[in-house]
Figure 1 (spheres, one colour):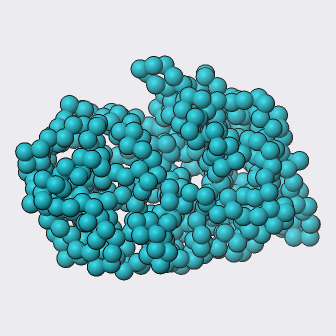
Figure 2: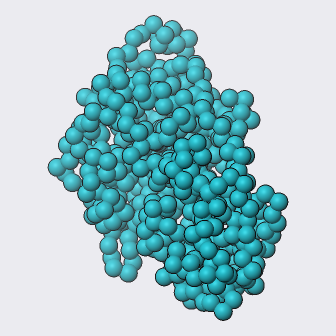
Figure 3: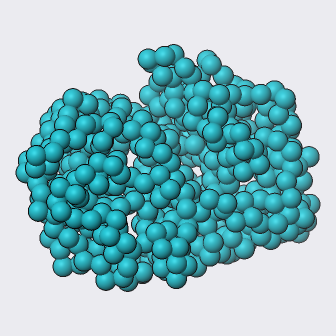
Length: 529
């Protein structure tokens, strides 16, 4: 728990008697925002890769700004929280063998592990098609019902039955749920005791082409490391190209298309494929420590209750083979710049009328490689998660002109959506639903690690919604560079909304609740919230 200093009773009386005018975008300084983005997205920072020289530059810059603003360290008297990372690389000299068929790594399948083992051997492991690989009590759905898959290889479809059927009464229809994410599918397969999981890729259902899968899974990956060397994680995490999956099912005398349709219907039963898989690969791992950055502005009356404001600092680093630097100016130097300016503006407001609750400003590592810094924070927080009111997460901001709307990710997920609507209305704006709910963006940024601990959050993201050129030509590409011509009017507009929303939460006594039945709501209830 933080060792917060309480302010004097006189200051508290002053705070309760003063009226604070609403923050408008004029409070946010263009020069500051430009300088932060320009610095963090400069070639000198090398794309801000975790464990690279760019990490030290990034975390020193962010921590230095927090210290200069007079914010207190947020982790055991320090601004930095250690994050034990392992860089794991699966040797790509591997072949997946099923019966008489052989599948090529990269073009047909990918496979990797988070286990700290030098060699992975999958030998004659029985294949079982488990539909979508989902066990979701709140949706009365269990693809593993009555099934023992210990030591077996489970084959499954990406996304969830709602997307497949477009039935709004099934899961969430077109909008992906967490059960549709590949991360969940691997986690559930591990809980079921499987030796391997192979997810069948489909571009529309996944939200990205096979090339993204291949590029993301055939190189080095980062993971947290536990004392058991991640022995409880899935030994083999794999993907199958759709064409390879069709060949696999055809050899088993099974119709993949027909089974896929059946898998989207309630009551689906897993199918033994009467095939056995073998796969071996060498695995190299190195361990080092990365860092999250944390700072606090202690509350005057209820300092143990915390409202969090966040943006991840990392990006993709530098490609050693071709020298390209992935500077990540919009994703996510703009987010970090926004957090730094929010810290400055809210600190100034706090000096006039102290917030009752504590504000915590954070910037985590390794979001781009699986929300690893967020996972470390969520599982080893400096305060209990039951004391966290909400998590406001920025992941890419609108560097252009102001908009008449703001995006909302998720629908009917938590009461924070009402806060968003209220503050947008004050600006004369509407709330626009996520234009790509099938992509599951609600589950692909740092706030989600906190949701798994029961803490509700909001995602503030503007990645291409008002700039159709961004996703195809700059997102996760070297072209995501800083441009001094950016007006940043839209960025300041959104920051003004966030400032008012954070201030409202920091001064009231509300604990925003989850609206939908989910594991997150259940987890929050365990904390008595």
